[in-house]
Image (tube, rainbow, N blue to C red; front, side, top):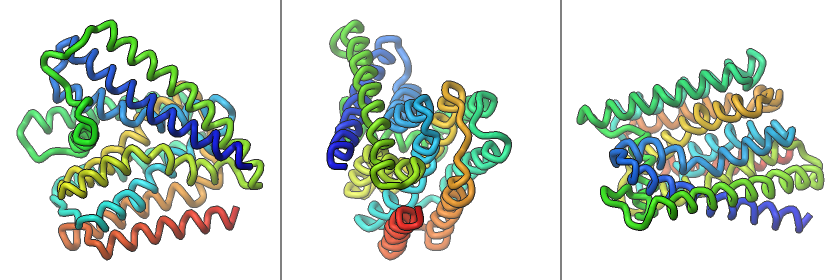
Length: 327
């Protein structure tokens, strides 16, 4: 059992490294092509930082392990809402703009409701995947219009800002250094590392599930989901330490929207899969409930307090223990 665990961890590390290379190279290419920094942030950085989750879900679905593929999407959202937001609130209470909370949190709730509907209507097939990707494009367009109109920043913007503040190399430059050929080579290297890391992760997650006598879905909902959510944890913690509460919250809300619409859409389009019954029966509803609880916590006091952060973290740990014990 030790070897699959070590190889799974190695796969996660490669996913993070490959994702970093991919986004860095893509940011440079976008700058060479003359894209505006705002558009680069909302698209290249925003979606690129979700590449570990995307690679894991795609490769799991292609490998015939929908429990890991869909468990990763649902479990990552749950980890974002309970674990990452909870830890961020424990570090520094998160002040919330209620209008922004209802707008971005509401979009996240609609996204998870769409995923629930897809589950009842036959799973995450190509039609659902195409609709989710259309939803991704509509969300980015909405976010771009919101930012250019001078209104309050949205979750997509905050997600990009969180990544850029954690890694200054992701900040788009008006006059990028180096050459376009080097930037393309970095992207290709990132893709190779991501593919290798994703295969290593999925293959050993399947072996680990067999060794532990649990379903693929359990491993996807817990181990894989937490592992692929580590970049969001790091960026949200850095934002919380810097007292940038709106960025910490927006990073989580934006990640959840991209997880469902972008990653779910790509998975459905490229590697259609049914949503496992166990996830449809409980876990996906817990994500919906967690979304509403976070919105309620933040709305009632205008912030997420340390006490509420403790409740969120405790709830997540309880969920993981219960999921494993009941499997």
